[in-house]
Image (cartoon, rainbow, N blue to C red; front, side, top):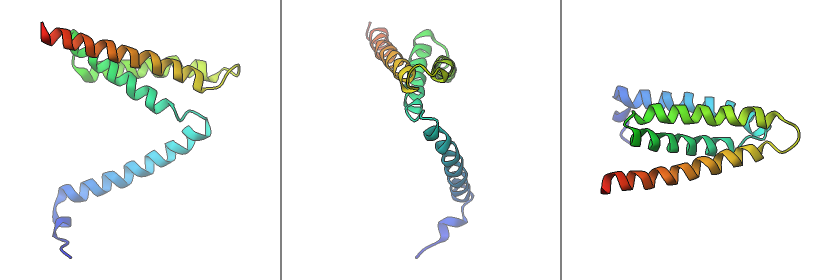
Length: 116
């Protein structure tokens, strides 16, 4: 078995990054599941996608739009999920649906922008 690949610095960095990332995700994952917010990651990912599309249409760097939409999604879900009147998944589902719809509209906007 050839172990010469471990002599490269980038491979050592990749293994360390994977180990630390896995440990961090495991620690955060336990809290997310315990708080019944496991659907939140999907909602934030779709918010980031919608933000990147909108930023691309507006000529802003996509990372800025992704970060702004992700933070807005978390800011919208946070106070609503803390209320005891309904399940924490209800506001997450609303934000998920809203941002997914915005992503579809944004992709259609990009199609029109690049086609005509």
